[in-house]
Image 1 (cartoon, one colour):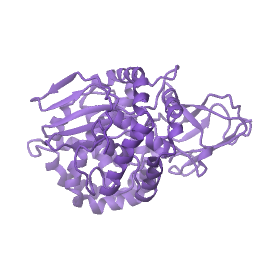
Image 2: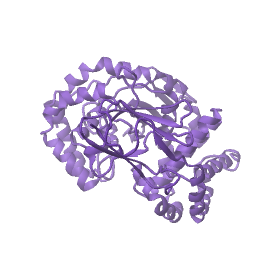
Image 3: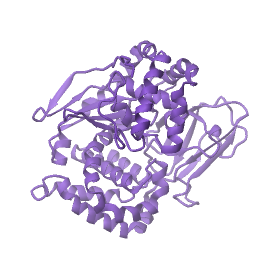
Image 4: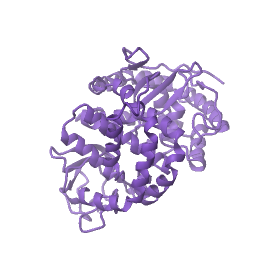
Length: 463
């Protein structure tokens, strides 16, 4: 296979923690991540088509639209439709390639990820290399080097807050991993925590952070309160996924019962089975534990809990209590893995009481109240309107709470998200077209007069 050198733009000052076993580098833009994000964007993969960072995605569209006819793009569509290659499977492939787009390890039916399969994975790599050359991608990356440098520089305040030593202490495991933060500028609200085990025994753990906020000039920005919990989340995955993969059988029965009840909420977050749900719940509980251990303000912790309840993890507070029980008894439980039998017993209780959790969550769940700019269902919305303000009866948290309807063309072109000071209002910035019908849904957030867990439709038309 041909080799094409990709220049990895990184900001590499490394810091060593503990006994020198783990390092974490400053944020970087990784061309493997950008290239795969771009390829799946061209294949119209929904999760890779965000236009929030329009300053950058316009550059992608201007450069790459002419290359949509490449064989790679059709192959991606086939992989997505037939094998479900999407979301994290894409980023797992990215980190399993070197900077020449060659596999870092031998592929098989489960590496880089089961959805790829060995034959498809190798075929994809060959097509990707050809696409890189055909599309003049090296030229594109060089042309955007200044933008990449500014974007990753803006992430430094979040990087500076991260206490990597906490992971070793909490999980009871001396990390041998190299931790790498990547700013996935084309990923929109998608964040991923893939890892790769290299032939020399070294493990690289990634936090691939999306770009879902921009400033008044359209440049990506990273508000600490919005991005820091997500960074914590992605690094937790490298510990949690491995731990639960070893102990899946202990959680199967209770996991299947719980998933059957909350599967709608889970699927809206692309969590398609009970195993993923169990992993995600423990990762999210660990984030809250980190926040408590580092004396985050109570309102921030409450917002984080609220977001997890909204996403369907309605047992999250009791799961955090279990993690606190573990941490208070480290003489008996030196590692979190040694505590998994207790976690499994807790999950049996969650399964037995899942309907009580549902009723309790309804009482604390935010409810949609109104739109500030117009009434839902209006046929006379000004297409020059630059935002919609969604008002709730309680402080609201979360970035992924809306979805399109069946007609994807009716989904507005959202460009940014921000909150009012009391967080009871979410302001979504957008670009509207003249004389068009629009529709989107709030996921599981209805007015009090309706079923609380139902998705709520917002529909309107422009003049």
